[in-house]
Image (cartoon, rainbow, N blue to C red):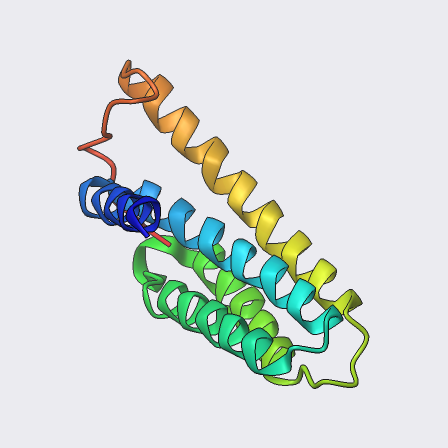
Length: 143
């Protein structure tokens, strides 16, 4: 119980102190983790628990979707909108009889997007001359 509380406190602090780019990356991490856990639960036929994980992943993807800045993000924001909506539609359509391969496909999409954001964060830090552990205060989220 104490370990779980410590982990929750660490995660809360990580979110509260993260820069906008890191928050996006944390969202991807959480959604990917949720989908991996949902897949495992689905394979064990524990659909109630799987659906809870799916709903949490949907909430995260929805937050990413509503956070898109179409004015500054342009075509990137439009393309992310399409991808997020595709993922959301697929998550809404999962049922207990479905093959669990859909999870792998969605995890791959989110993992590739997360890798792009990781690269962007690395480039932002390199361009600003900051080390990887320092917050990028001058960066503004555009997508």
